[in-house]
View (cartoon, rainbow, N blue to C red):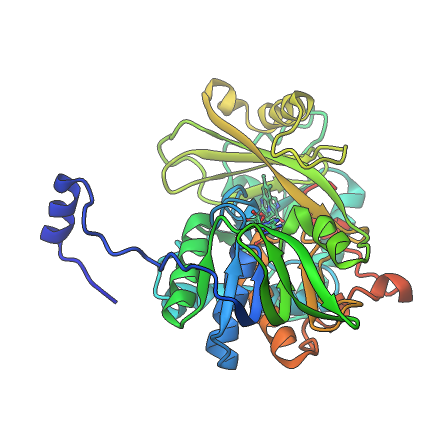
Length: 416
Ligand code: FAD
Ligand code: PYC
């Protein structure tokens, strides 16, 4: 890797960033690849990286219809945690957490992973029972977790309103100390550069418009830049999973919804942990730049527009001000939406499909950023071996036929 001294960097800044080496090549698509990954978000790029690194498969293209990280990867609020309820989820999200803990070193790119802890608030007795059950389950699975009472929450967030007269009083929280946030763009850029270094072609502005099949097997894809043959195709397109499944001739139990978020102007450090409330539908953290990053639950209707409705914003800002009256003087800077792919059990689908050699990784809904490295790791294994890894075996598409759902609505922490 090329390293720059302070003089180099100052020189580049003054000369207007000329002669910088691009972090990854602008690859033109070849006529055929061993593996094609559709979707250049964090999950697709991580899959390509681990295919090359862990399985020695480097004849790989990532086809992205826009720019890498321009989907949910660059639109999410970057919360990373592994405090899910069921054993299968614990295995998956904790694998991701362990990869996060070494990721900057592994891909030689600072993803700014900050383990500042995540609180999930409880506002009534049933919330607190659910919290205790989930924290106990986490501990049995070797995942860190604590149950905090009101005072414990106040110690971590001194300005939170714990008054008894608010509509949803704060009775306590679950707390995962190893959870936190990371820089989402850096995750996309870091995986892209690391995959490119191992020989993967990253092809932007290349939309997949058809999945070509022969005799029940995938043989390639049609794209806005012409047809490309492949032995195996992995599809990781988040909110567009249903569209790609239709191209391949089957249906997924997935609905696409808008999910919105916004950031305030940068403030001096005020909040050094992440606080979420599923019941009141608001969560907040402070970025390293100082912005408060704020979000809520999904918009209720289906859609492919990367924007949502005002009524959701009005609702979550009212909730924000009830919990943190201090923020009433905040100025908001930017607001946006993404399209999230929601499964009926709030768990992802990662595995084989009815078409041979075609694999789907989708249904992460409101919570896939935290899984990015783990998702790529297990999906690469699944594609390389034509079999799921034990970690993702429970997340097969046929669980909806078998009734073996992994219901994580409680731990999803963002209403959907
Ligand atoms: P994406 O990053 O969306 O990548 C899919 C890519 O596929 C896109 O770049 C798209 O352009 C491309 N594509 C689509 N169709 C085609 C086609 N036909 N041909 C080629 N390319 C195509 N998760 C958390 O864990 N923590 C959070 O705090 C969190 N906050 C969120 C906040 C918001 C507002 C949103 C919208 C989501 C949030 N999420 C969060 C969810 C998380 O962002 C996603 O689950 C995750 O980023 C999905 O990653 P991905 O790589 O699968 O999808
Ligand atoms: O899954 O932790 C999460 C999350 C936070 C915000 C959106 N999703």
